[in-house]
Amino acid sequence: MKQFCNVKKLPLLFLVCCILVFTSCKNPVEEYGDTVIKTYKGTQQFGKEVSLKQLQESIKAFHATHGRYPKDLGEISDFTGLTLDEDKYDYDPSTGVIRLKK
Image (tube, rainbow, N blue to C red; front, side):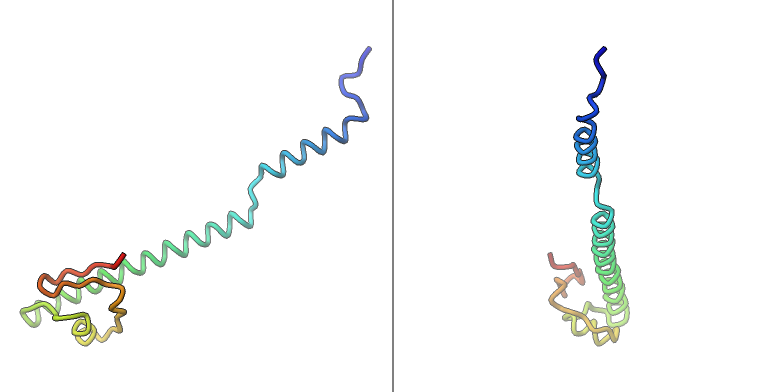
């Protein structure tokens, strides 16, 4: 009667199975790193959106106080006391619309 599995081939079969299992598994450290990076980038975007919302509200408050829109972002900065990076925003003083630059 023939044996189902040759004993000499078992270590080779075991080795092949181990290689398949380990190469198909994802690296948990790499997955954790990817998650941290995605979370960090999401937080950065959230911070930009919050800052933009704050600026939009500041422009509305300036308009309500002075009866006109600020002539530039420097005037908004003086009004709010915040330090603004003017290179991050597109501002139209005729409409009071502010947007993040892409």
